[in-house]
Amino acid sequence: MTGRRRYLRVSTDHEVIGVQFLVTSLAFFIIGGLMALIIRAEQALPGFDFLGGENYNRLLSNHGSIMIFLSILPAVLGLTHAVLPETVGANRPTHPKLGALSFWLIPVAGALMLASFFAGGASSGWTAYTPLSTQSAGAGQTLWAVSLLLVVGSLVLSSVSFLSTIRSHKPDVIWDTPLFAWSAMASSVLAMIASPVILLALVLLLVQRIAGPQLALLDGVIGVIVWQNLFWFFANSLTMILMLPMIGVICEVVPNYSGRPIVAHRSTAIAMAVIAGLALVSWGQHMFASGLISGMRIPFMVASMAVAVPLAYIVFVWIATIWLGKVRFETPMLFALGFIGLLVIGGLSGMALASVPINLQLQSSYFAVGHLHFALLGGAISGLFAGIYFWFPKLTGRDYDGGLGILHALGHSGGVFLTFSPMFVLGLMGLRRRVFDYPAGQNIEIFQLGVTAGALLLASTTMLFVYNMFFSALRGGSVERSALEAGWSFQPTQERDPV
Image 1 (spheres, rainbow, N blue to C red):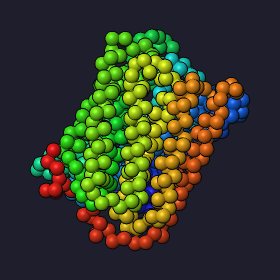
Image 2: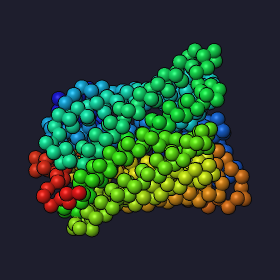
Image 3: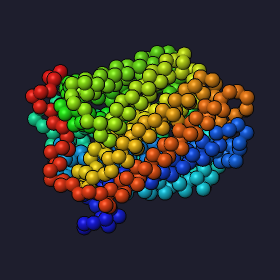
Image 4: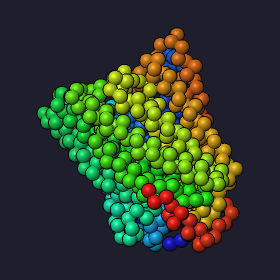
């Protein structure tokens, strides 16, 4: 089937699956963004309480869950589904039905997640710490857990599809694998290792909620620590499951708009593999302040800080490629530059939180909120926008409005900085996260207003993106796709640094 109706049906065409993922994730991004604006309205001024503590907790829990599990993750999967086969020289994925099933789990998961808000609500945060998540009344938390089971199932199916496609079409020399495909491979291996752990945790949560207090699997001191270890083993890896493909996107965008192959192709691939490995052994940094055995703090601190080394190396590779090339400042390149700058800020704040003494003071403050959003909105989302603009003509056969794209790139990067950099100051001033109101007269109102203004800027630039993409897909100038097929990946050549 051709035309727009093919996007509304079950399809095994990987480009259709990719677009279905991306459009669905955009819908949930808008829903999660509207929740964020309501949260910011609540937080803008002290004493301005229109939600109440219970509704605020439910809204905050759904906002975090929707943005991470139903927006950013499906978007990363969708972009990978759409472009990975051509990147490795294949016409179609090895197991296209896995991709189709992977997508259709997401709308069902999203419906359950939204339903949870009206069924008592999931009010224990996106981390669902026990005993809050085991003892909350109503079916909301149960629906939340079932929703996440489906999301993780989608991740596993997509990862199997990606790995089989890469394995079937890898080049004779493994180091000549395009870096986007390499990043997808590292991310998929990481997902295959980490996903069974969270599946076990969710099954335990569901069994306890269904069986009742007589089966206290996750209550008590032991149960609380078990949940935290299981959850953060996955969630810490999830950060890199989301980030690694976006690093791969930037490794494609920077060379194409610098006019030269990327510097140090082989060692960049190795750095990605090292990042994936370190993500598996650094989950304890999230538990420094919550009962982790004191003797384990130092190994987890070292492992968490060590992630900065390969990340910094890749950043220097991008800078060297730009320095040695002739840069064209078009929309994907502007997003790539924004990604690099915002990722550095997110990485430096992450290094601070990886230090045990600093973490003990700031883990439950707005400083941690700022770090998380710089990593996800400044990093993963910026990379997604770079990739969508970069491959949009190849996927749709139409061009987008470059002027609107540049405005979006500048507004997004500026909005992320304006929204989340004040959170570092608020955290250092002692403002706790997950608190729906705060007392007046503490000189933090101006920073809270700055965060709210930045959120409004981000919302407006997102609407600009929606308009640009949908208008361009329907009425944009035609592009000859066959002339662009060679541009799926900037292949390494003899000019490449052999490192």
